[in-house]
Amino acid sequence: MSTATIPPTALSSAFKQVCARRFSLFTGTSNHLKCRGRWRNLTVKMSAVSDPLEVCVKASITTPGRLGDCPFSQRVLLTLEEKHLLYDMKLVDLANKPEWFLEVSPEGKVPIIKLDQKWVTDSDVITQSLEEKFPEPPLGSPPEKSSVGSKIFSIFIGFLKSKDPSDGTEQALLSELTSFNEYIKENGPFINGKEISAVDLSLGPKLYHLEIALGHYKNWSVPDSLPYLKSYMKTIFSMDSFVKTRALPEDVIAGWRPKVMG
Ligand SMILES: N[C@@H](CCC(=O)N[C@@H](CS)C(=O)NCC(=O)O)C(=O)O
Image (cartoon, rainbow, N blue to C red):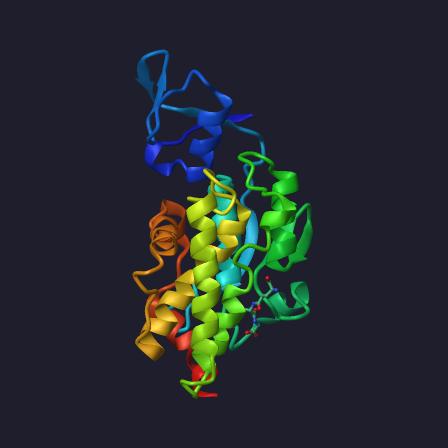
């Protein structure tokens, strides 16, 4: 068992939530926690799982050595960050996949992660496996919430690729975003209510792509008539874990170019 002191700024939103929920003696609401009236540093005992988890993600296509623009990779990295797991990130050039990568990822897709000596593919399976193996802090949400916002990404791609302004794709996106805005208004601030969960960590990176790609290629932005969606996006995009794992805007733009031009 090793002991690590995590400075308050390194506390993830989910971890802060779990502390507030599990230890009623902590009354702090910010990064600092108050214990019986005194502000204290938080010492976290970590289990002997000190070996970093190996995770393969997309490399930047614009800037050597930087993380690329894969929203599924970011989803997995966000989960690792929010669960305070150590990881060793391997950047894979998808335009020139190395032999070692194709051996562990036969479909040639990222993200993949090594868990219990086995490589696991697909962000759905990976995040579920991480939840089972590392249940604290919990990020699960009830099954009925897992589909909230799930159509936004494909509808956004339809609008992004559309060359006909009157084909209804913009309207379809607006309608889906309006439903989501209403949902968050009634149930928010997050999809599962007060606490961030896996479903937000999946949707957040997709909304980030939507904002950058539609802004660039269509001069389009989320309308002010959807304030709950706007504030949801702002909250997620400004989380420390999101800032640390987000793609460069120029990579998002370059990544979507073939779809827009194609
Ligand atoms: N369903 C998969 C999708 C993963 C996926 O499509 N990854 C893309 C990058 S964002 C990829 O690796 N594509 C292979 C390629 O570009 O060659 C998941 O959720 O992990």
